[in-house]
Image 1 (cartoon, one colour):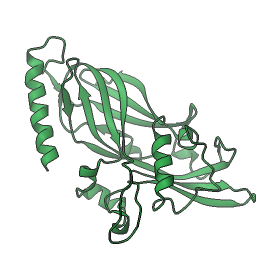
Image 2: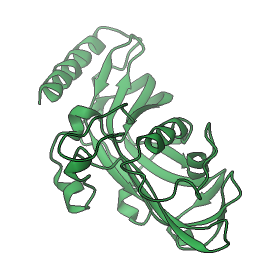
Image 3: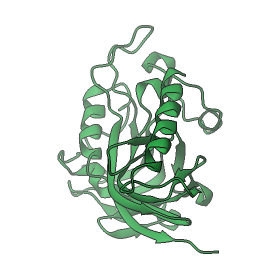
Image 4: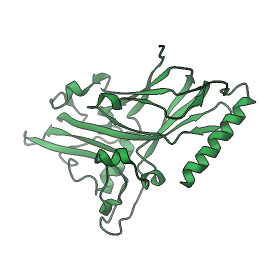
Length: 261
């Protein structure tokens, strides 16, 4: 709650500051930009039509399928040319299998203009993760209390051909890294992270594409061996930190377009 009050005050102050700085967005017009979420495997588009098929080969040479892929973003933030920060506290659960989750209109308005950076958080920071979200609850996105509670950052499930040439399931689930599962878990490292999309001009009808290169979860900087890390990864803080490191290169800015009626 404190975070949301502070963010609201900062957001209001930013709007006032923008009125007097011609280099920053002017608040004469307020708009709700839209975000569009897409998936690819090293540049080849991935959609729900590609689910449940062994169409992908990771950097370690393992052939795999994708059965489920969904993740949450939060704290969408706009930084003006003078360094003011407009934080929206908005979140969205992106699910490759649910079309209406792949577009997200910002629920609060921002002023039109040129922003030198637009960013979001992959997952939920610790304060947000302690909140209660009806939509995430209904999607069964919760993390068990013995692992610290809160919510997943990502659920990525599928099958791969293991070293014995058998099909085997994997659950690449990202959460807050945790040790000592039980009544008093401990947290060695935060594993949510910030994604900077760069400079974007916002006008009425702006749509911003956020791309996820799924292949990057398996290769950079850590070449992922699914024979070693496949299931029971949530209570494995080492695996969670490896996911955090690999996630740094997963997201990128795609097309920025203007939607007209």
